Image (cartoon, rainbow, N blue to C red; front, side, top):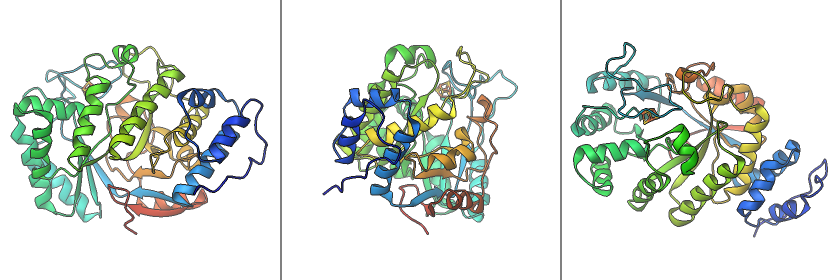
Length: 368
Ligand code: SF4
């Protein structure tokens, strides 16, 4: 039984009383509702409603994870227009790590108390499938309690091609080697016309969703993302959210949603600024209101900056992501945020924003 919400203190902006009533009654919003909310100029109204809905799900708790990112390589056979991370093997600043080097990084990070390794890379032109399974086994050998959140959907499709197996059998093999959770990267914006402009050659929306569907049916869990603030329209964002919501209705396999603000540097997209704070906060708020079947919404501090991420906790977000230690994908695209956070800085930021900090694991279960 959903408890009715109180009215907003500042009142309901003209033309939004029906949506306020729907949200207050806990009714599902449709896509036209979401578009109207995106077009609403009253950010306080959106934030107030999103905060109340978040409170129903998570009370005043906000989470973070103690994790480390590892990019095993930035060599990639694709050339997505928005990507500042990928390199060709002829490039001086390309890199790849051996399994032994990655295990050493994991060992050092484990000693610092991480519970999760978050591992993604480009679609490497020549590493064999065994490299990836060896890496997972080596990381589990460092500490079997380490949770391995690895690979985007397009990487899984690349690994399936390497393994000469279908997606299902590839995922089964990766899970047997130690894969715990799929990452949500690579969703970008699903509509083909936008995908063509920002990530030509990448997998289609159907392929992204199908990879996650197969993983969920195997009992696996994953997160999902949306890259916003470039050439897409608000309607494109709504379509993207609707496709994620439909798959979540079907599988309930997404543990969280992570909206990613576009970063403008070192790429081939003719958009030279990142999304504004207004756009970021309304995107988080509308996501919280529309994605009624998602429990967790992340304010990704690497892209937002910690100050805006703190504020986002009052606009529907209930998670600040992780300590990370070494972030490259956003920083190569112009992010000016630090490379890492400490437990104290994450918890302090949450507490200062008026929420109760809780350390979580990969599946958003509370650690302490
Ligand atoms: S976004 Fe991923 S798949 Fe596309 S070029 Fe960059 S690393 Fe490669």
